Length: 439
Image 1 (cartoon, one colour):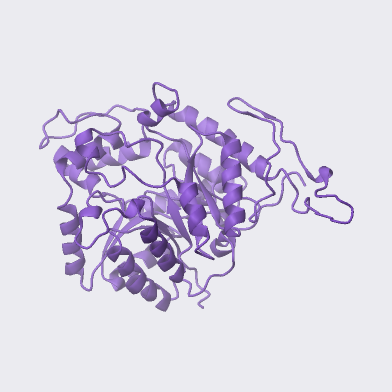
Image 2 (cartoon, rainbow, N blue to C red):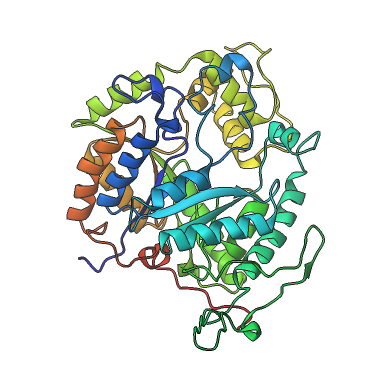
């Protein structure tokens, strides 16, 4: 294996494709988000290709969009992430199992138990994507009338992280002696009671689960706002970035890594993985045609619903072929809103923005295995990323194309592993196992 720096690759698998038209593509599996045999086959193929992780985003509500858009969405029903990942852990051996869990609408004791359990069940392959949920419909499902304020969500998230990691460290690694002769199951002096009392949270502890195999499941963060970047710099070991081009990727990479240094952390202790929508063809023209076919399957009702959701503001009543009106800041995701506004400033109409958002308007590599590998290598070499979180255009063909054609090209160049480095997600990502902060 080459000693040069190598890409880390995750697979964005909830939804199985971010593209609104994916379920309609010829040959696609329409119910793939809610089809366990299909999902099992996908993760096993990804593991055979030596992917680092299988990642599941999560939503705590039916997506906040009009029913005319919602009825066209393949994300309206899908499995709860922990239940699915626990099942998938039993049919895999090495691939990481990452899931989103909200710090806004859940409790740290719940989160700590679930991820500790998944880490033990999987033999050390769990990863927690820390998300501050921005969805007014989710608020309604948890006893609130509106979203929690954006900056306040991040304040709670920072405290939440401290509590969860403190709970994971409730027991020393050697606490459970299980001495059948003396009848001592664990050593009480090797147990720590957290007794946390903070601004947002009050949690006594200890956690009723042994310390996770990895010490802590891998910590992931995806926020791109000022507050999100700072939270990532202080806590994250993997960042799912949303950079749309290499220049933006390099700026984000440099900013977050610099923040890590200022926070007293080693910048190598974080892997930055932008989401990358990848369409593979035997020729560039074939790949472009596949993307065009896919985009043509996005209905305007669906696109405008996605656009409104990203903006946190309803533009349905405006002229579809006119410019985007001035969009106020809301409690929705600020980075998502800002990306749309920036695109509008380049002259795109509401209709064009809806088409772009509905068909996925982020970073896309559309080409042959060779041209895609060229672009990925450039991002790695120029410090725009440490790898990518791959978004497949449709399943199973889009996944098969990447695994069967792009991965071998990356391996041929020494840019991607041919065997896993270890048994845990941390080992394969090159991340250290954290010491217990109390023992």
